[in-house]
Image 1 (cartoon, one colour):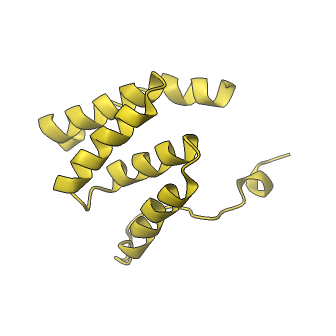
Image 2 (spheres, rainbow, N blue to C red):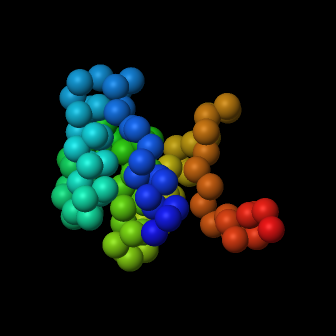
Image 3 (cartoon, rainbow, N blue to C red):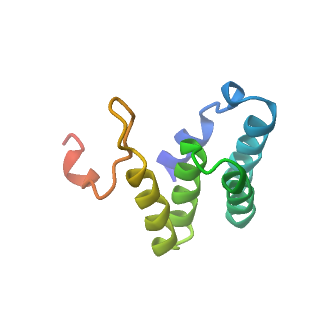
Length: 105
């Protein structure tokens, strides 16, 4: 609801990823924003089949799978991110963090 509206209002053009990757990420993002999660997941899976190490695509796919209640699939994507996040100074996704307790009162 409100949090989703704020998230959707953010401008994510993905230009830093180049024409093909950025265009695919934009299409997936737009599909998700339009409520077409299956289409977003299709874009992201196709992209990951070509660029398996693309963190942003795997994060987006995991989030989309969570929104569609495919929790086992989302967990697989997040596990894959954690598995490959062994490089020092690399951003690691937060898996299993209790966000409710981490919110200010």
